[in-house]
Amino acid sequence: MFLIQNIPCVILAGGKSSRMGENKALLPFGKLNLISYEYQKMCKIFQNVFISCKKGILPEFEKNTLIEKDEIFSPLVGIRNAFLALKASKIFFLSVDTPFVKNETIHRICSIEGSYDVIYPSLKGRSHYLISLWNKSTLEELQTALNGREYKIGNLIDKLQTLAISLNDEEEFYNLNTPLDYQNAIKNLKDEDA
Image (cartoon, helix red, strand yellow):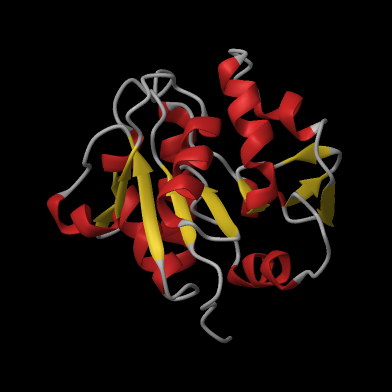
C-alpha cells in the first residue's frame, strides 16, 4: 500500500484513562508501549503522524506532539487543537486505545472523495467516531460545541454531514478501556505474532 502524504494522522491520547486506572498510552504493548506501537504502525501508513495529548508523553515524540492546553477531557479538544496547529484541510484521527484497526480500513476511509465533514466506520450499528477522517469545515462547529460545554462527540456528529462505512470485523475495533480489555488485547497481540 502507498504512503498517505496529503492527510496527516493524529493519534488522540489526551484522555483521563480513568477506567484503566493509569495512562493507557504508556502500557506495555508487545516490545513497545501502546503509544509507540500506534505511532510506528501509523508511520507505515501516513507520511506525517502526530500525537495529541495534555502533556508530553515521551521525549522521542516531542517534535510530533500537539499539546492540548485545554483541561477539558474530550476528544473534541484534541480534534480542534489538531486543526488549529496543523492547518490541514483533512486529518485522520485514531484513538490511542484502538491498536487493531487494519491498514486497509484506514486507506479506504482516507480515499473517499466527497464533501463530507466526517467519514467513520460503523460495525453492527455502532459508530466509531475516533477512527475517522475529519474535514476542517468542522472547526466552527467544534468550537461552538466546546464553547457550549457540549463534549459528547456523538452530539456533534449529528449536526455534521457524515458518511458511515459499514464494516464487519469486530476485533478491528477492539477498544482498551479497562484492565480486562488490556489483558485481552495483549493475548490477541501474542496470537497475531504467533
